[in-house]
Image (cartoon, rainbow, N blue to C red):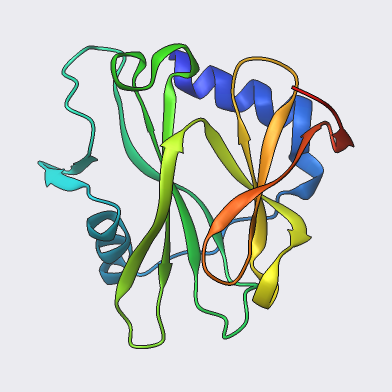
Length: 161
C-alpha cells in the first residue's frame, strides 16, 4: 500500500470512522466539473494537479461527497497523494461545491487528509477535519463565506496543538 493511502486508512481507523457515511456518487459530468474547479487537469484517465512523476504519486480522487448543506448541492473533498508536493503528510485536498446554477466552485485547498464530520456550521455545511502527522488536528467550520479554524481535536476530543 502506498504511503498516502496508508496514512488515510490509519487516520480513518484512529480518528473518525464513526463520522463517515458511504459517499454519494457524482455523475461523470459533475465529477469532471469538480476536478476542473479544483484546478486538476485530465492526463490520460487520471486527474492531476500536482506535477509529480514519482512512483509514489497518487492521482486525484473523490474522497467524500456531502449533500447535507442547505439546498442539497454537493460539497466534495478531492484528495491527491505526493510527498514531493505535500511533504511529510503526503496528501493534499481540495474542497469544491456545486452551485445552484450547476457550476462548480473551489472553496479551499491545502495539505492534509480532509474529511467531513457530523458537526455543522452555517447553512448546514459539514465541519472538515484536516488530519496529518501528530495527534491534534484542526477542524474548520463554514461561517457563511469561507471555511475557518473552529477548534482542534483528536478522536473527537478537544486538544491543543
